[in-house]
Length: 333
Image 1 (cartoon, rainbow, N blue to C red):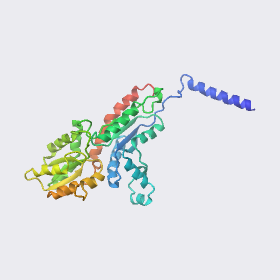
Image 2: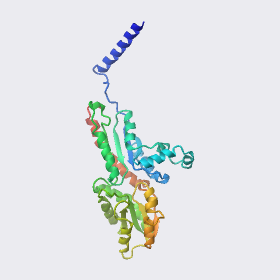
Image 3: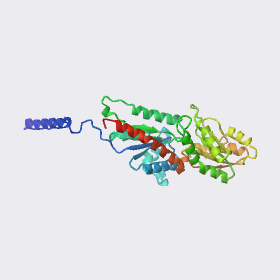
Image 4: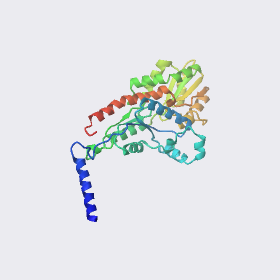
């Protein structure tokens, strides 16, 4: 009886093996592409109000790419840890019903990509939610490049055969004219709000202490050309800072005595609440106030502007055909 059972199992396995190897049938290594995916990767935020800016971008991307699975990733370890701790805080969750459940389990880009790949090979678009190609974007781009170039003994087992990364809002390098022009157009509501207040518009970007980013200067030039001379742009991490901007404003004869202060960041998070509009003496608001100006902070991130969110949609639409070309040329798909 045991011998007969063994013989049956042996014959079944042998038949199955021959079936896999026979012409005209699926190979054991044949890829079965899944639904394509988009990963929106940004620094993240712990601020519930600021989170809405990211969710607005996600909404616009979901509307533009209905055939894709859309995922979020936060690159900041600290921010992810805070959300994970909040997951068990029922009082916080009850007080903040606008926060989607998946935010409490938010992951970094690499982990999100690993989860996506676990279900099989698929076309993946990774979109940066950064403004410029600073450190955060550079690291994200290197991660995607490494995954795209990951080699396996059998090409058919390559985990990420069709993947690419979308550029930050203003493009790479010193920025691209078409994206800077789109950003100028997207920032029109801020320029108009400052005009209504008869105010100087001062934008605070993040900046970078390591990489030289001339793109901010190009953006400022475009903004002044479109909306007038009373517009200024500084950053947290690199000059010009608030004191230099104050000095520049003071040199302008008949300059407005009001400053409309807004973050040039996707989210109005910690930098906006503390470095920009905080009550500490070294905040931008305090420095401008001490300089004799009335300061009116604007506490919404760029992601809350549909016009800015659409810039990321445009980057994804530019990326999609490049990754689809990888797919079309892949003999193993």
